Image 1: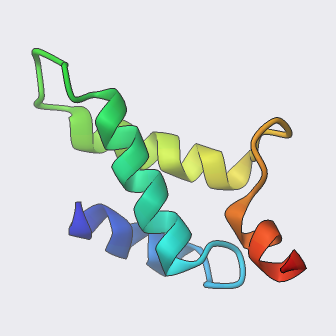
Image 2: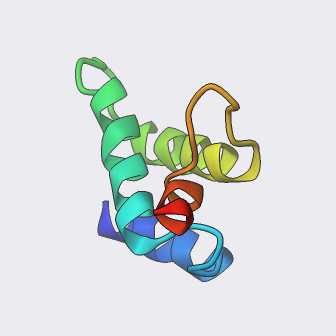
Amino acid sequence: MAGIVDRIQQRYPREVVSAFDLEGRVRGVYRQFSTAHLRTFVAIFVERLVRRSIEEPSPAVPDAVAVQKRV
């Protein structure tokens, strides 16, 4: 998990996604695969889904970075 967080942090500056938010996203996506029988590609799926969540934020789920800036 740490490797995924490190790679994504190198790609996106902290202004785009905080370390706390990024770690939470990675943990959340990993949880989605917790019951997967085939675990070989889980890390690849997790990284792609987290990157997609950063690049294309869902309007239904507020971005944690935006929420932090408002507080």
